[in-house]
Amino acid sequence: MGSVRAVLIDIDGVLTVSWQPLPGTVEALREIRAAGLGVALVTNTTSRTRASIARTLADAGFAVSAEDILTAPAVTAAYLAEHCPGARCALLNSGDIEEDLAGIPLVGEDDRDSAPDVVIVGGAGPEFGYAALNRAFGHLQRGARLVAMHRNLYWRTNEGLQLDTGAFLAGLEQAARVAAEITGKPSAAFFEAALAHVGAGAGEAVMVGDDIESDVLAAQRAGVTGVLVRTGKYLPETHRDASGTPDHVIDSFAELPALLAEMRESAQQ
Image (cartoon, rainbow, N blue to C red):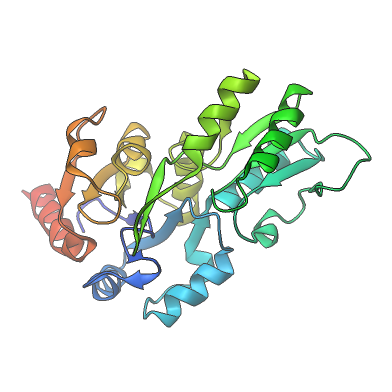
């Protein structure tokens, strides 16, 4: 559709909420694929592996496979392999993602042989209690690097907004006087990996998300056209107070095919 060759799509809050499809999203994704566009589902979800996400989405009617999905854990594994190969890592995360961290040496809570070189912070959940956070704080005081998959403050479920990693990460950074290295959205490296995944240049892609800062404006800084949807974690006040302006705003992902058609027509004029 015009110069657009690929669509990068956040999952939670855009295609689904609590893994249930939002109205019209299954059909819209099918239409986008029928138009011959490349598709990558790019997510900061840290509670499931790529294979698990693909199975859940397929069961919900989405025509996707694990190869279509790029997660923060998968990008984190690649980042660690490149920047600190062989480092022993302590993982603080809610959910089992070890499959997507293949090749990364993980240190268990009871492993007393040596202190970890890296503290990896994933998605928040019940595991983020005082003992776990204090243990991570101790590792950081002893010189471990802090790598976080994202710094999202909250996400939306069918029970409303839920507190996420960013609230805890800020405390760890300030207490230990370190700055986290962010591997998922909104890092530029994440969008570079997503574009490489679909084989498109930044100017040939659009990013669709419900998080104006981490999804949309971060993509725009990377040269990708940003599309904000008014679903999921979208709040009028965060839109109003954002650090920038989205290229496009639509009510839901179901409206994306029509927007892409308008972009194609504009490009041809």
